[in-house]
Image (cartoon, rainbow, N blue to C red; front, side, top):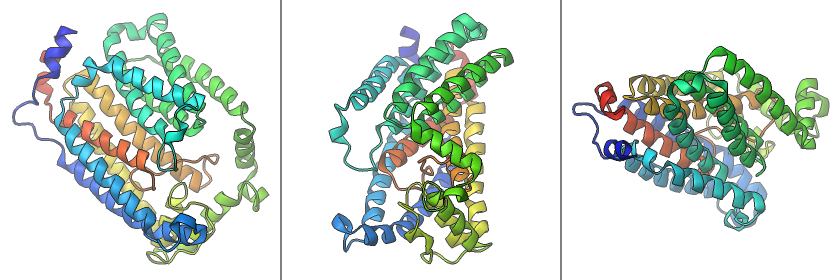
Length: 378
């Protein structure tokens, strides 16, 4: 612990600047997201009425507030040495577990009064920090099934299980996929990965079968959403209709008609509105921005001064990338339907703030040069 304390206080390497390219990419996605949230949400506000009545910009204002708060978090975290999380990692894990347990038991649900607050999003960030520290500390022992794979599976299963009990199956699934990528980068061999995929896949199937609505969604996806157009397939069918109407160049910003049919198009269905209003070219632009995010993020991971920084960077990048893939997969009926937002773009306070916080941590990792590796490993 003494070595950790000393390294946590060290400043970034001299002459190393944070990755401004990553910041520019994130700002581009964020601005696009604000535009699309307004375009996709004002119709929902008009239809729902109630507290939104007469406030077509209600969701835009709240998203802008979340973006401002998240950007402040980004700036703060970009200046905090990421090694300090090692010192407080047990507190981070304890807070993460406590938050999930209280939500599972219903004790903390009175704190959540809107879809914009999702504790599982914040818990996912805490879990990735702990997993990065844990994997980095294992070293060569990670290749042992008894010392590496089994403890890792139990740890991951416990945290992901708590998230799925919220219930938030998609976030739990994303955490498992992200942690698996970190496990592979940490040095796991193919045998461990195959065993993990076998038993992990079986566990996920059992979790899916535990809830009837999850199996219904999987069966609908296997059959085709058009087999129940007015029922469970309605949301996906309307999303596909939006993409079809958009064609190559779209119908124009603010001109979407499907946003009046897709429920909460500003959250789970926002990529469909992007496709309708900006066309295939707009969809390619969005996917291209996520591709650039992945490239710059993995570039930071590759240049990280230590294994802990590399694993944390990989986890943060994979989290956003895999979630974007899942959201787009749902909208295009490539994957079974699940309520997953598009990072940085969809409306949602917890998602946006946690994503921007992850960017701050990534930027701090980018400020540390490869030359520090020997210092942090002592």
